[in-house]
Length: 228
Figure (cartoon, rainbow, N blue to C red):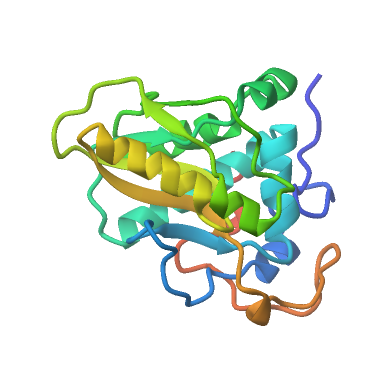
């Protein structure tokens, strides 16, 4: 039985994101790249309707939202003029992979690679350690995750390293460092970036009527381009 499509942000029937939620999505705030993540490519500001949109992809495997987000990130990479030879991802913890039944970063990376028409393969393994979600920012920076390369890279290969959200940057930075250590040239990318507190918007709840600056320059509402 086929289930009706629902918006991953507000859970209303229809495309994901719906037009109202899409209108509330904002591009990343104009902030300097985090330390160790020069050239960071991101699609959204992790605020307002972007938060439930990304969360349902991450925790509930919302495939329609995933496709829309990953395709949008690929368009942002193209718009930035960033050359890419290979796409990989920052793996989640083994515990999360077992409990969820999937690695959301891998799913994102594979759709991004398909949209860019380049190969996607696992390059990194995450070493045992705590997940970043829910930890204070200072703890994340002081003791971030650790990755090791498990695949050889052509020297100088331009590797797009995909993650979901950049807050402190600790996870993506550790993944980038592992790729560079394996001989690649890492290009960091994430679906969204958490803005600094001073520029966060007011709390959002379901299909806002107050519109932000939409991101239609690189991503269209699913209704305009045909929902997957």
